[in-house]
Image 1 (cartoon, one colour):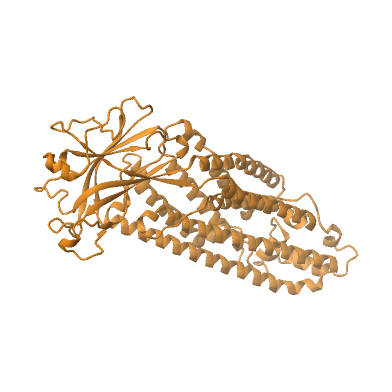
Image 2 (image 1 turned 90 degrees about the horizontal axis):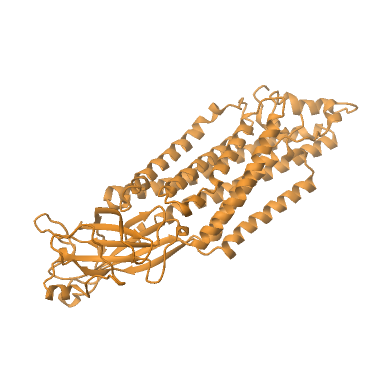
Length: 541
């Protein structure tokens, strides 16, 4: 058998390939650290208080906080009381972006967080379990003089979580509560230049609407969007990496199909991993710049979820196929106990994502964090996902330890070989162990990236605990995945070289019986590499 490139390529060439991959890995980190700006930008907005003087609150009317058609404004609620303006006639207006700026499709998404400025009053305190009812609408336009077009309208409820840090006395009236940030709106793309939010806080004592929520002085919003510069760097990386992985994928499978034997399980999962890497690489995000595709965030999450599932399953099978456990493997059914939980966890991720971003396709103001049950479920999901990721990594470390231990046990057969044959196998074992350590490193970085991504996505909901992710971390991990998949397909592709033909035939070699015992008696089943055969097929012994 010709074997794989990892065992037949000379050490010098392997070192050159490793150095080149390492340089590309360093470059992927530097692209994010030196070229790309930070992934996201946060912009703070203070809502303007507009007065709706039209009785019946005419629908389709939008209130602009500034500009040529700006609304009738008031400075505070004391002015409203002096002018006998009712609370139901006040509209909080926010224009996104700030004056003399424009939004861009390069921003990819927009997340809006809401915070109430609530003053303490002895006669109007925030009740326990207080819920604010918000009548909100969002509209868009693409020029400053055009008409506003409604994008969405909804009546939302947000539970207030506020603390008053000083004693509740008359002397402290006017001081502000410390209130948690509230999820407010999320748009899956930013296809228009200007957005307008009109927010009402309807009051009805008979229906207990917005009663017991304290004295709201102002509404502040934080708009978070992806930086356009980071988006361009990200798209450029995807555009460059897609053909690179696609070419090596086609080359790898062509070499597999040229062999006389059918592909084994390990070769099939390597090919599947390459397919998933290509799927996540394809830069379909370019179309989001020219088309109003609101589902791009959800689609991106689905692609990443498929890749996570395939990558985690591959590592389990990759280690399992090299275990000497007296079990005939090369069948996917052997791994259902390990791969099954991964598939189930990925399905739960998909359901969780659909429960929020799926609904947001119709109602951008919906948030699973808005209710107590939703918040508890989301928090529990993030914690459980992090724990499961850590347990997976520990299990993978245990499998690698088993592989190393079993390989060390087989080293006792090496002294019976000829010197050239023994050095050959010692070199193969070292290469394989090094590749396993690289695999563990990639797995550790992936688990860390997954946990940080989950926490970062919900960091507005964790109170004071926030995680800032640098652009270099995103580009570095993404580059690492591509380089790892590239290396696996390259190293495990069938080689055209043949090592030790004379020795394997036993011509003039007194130790040929021991050679044949190690390379064939242990492994009656053919496989992609000598190490694969030597360590993974002991079932017939």
